[in-house]
Length: 197
Image 1: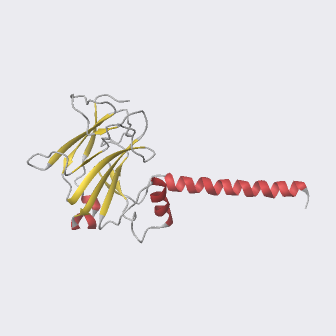
Image 2: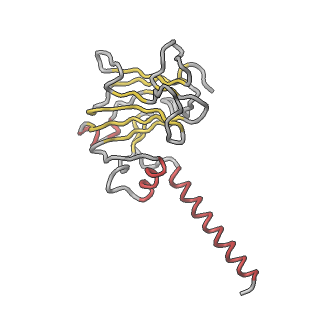
Image 3: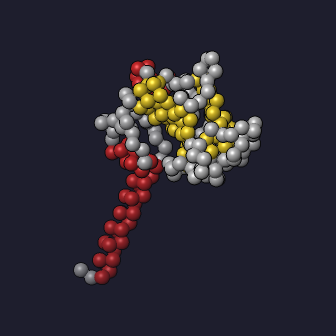
């Protein structure tokens, strides 16, 4: 075999390997096409399930989740507000809804790399035990990059910096109705406060 042949086949092999790695990365990071939607929130029921396919398992591993099965926990993820605009950490958001039908629930703000924001006060999350609700079981939570929201209150979740933002709603021991049809969630609305470009 001459050098030209070795270089040709070696180059072809490297191109094939790069193509495979690129396809795998795209498949794992692309939007989930089999998720169930409820407003801006999406849930993938195979996460944490023994029926999960290899792509779902890879997504869970890359996202750094330790997913439980849907009978124990349903995970809803929002990457856009209720108007369909991408969430950004530099913007202030108002999350409003009805207490979900689950034993315990929480909403956590993550940066687009799926890690918590660097916030010395550690205001990353709200939960059903901590958030105030009105007589109808409605709650309002606010996220902000600042120490104060537009109405002068401390934010429930701090999102400093200028990057993508992801909210994760976790329902622990969700009701039988939600387990059977997660799309029936009375999804909390996510609204941008003020002007944010």
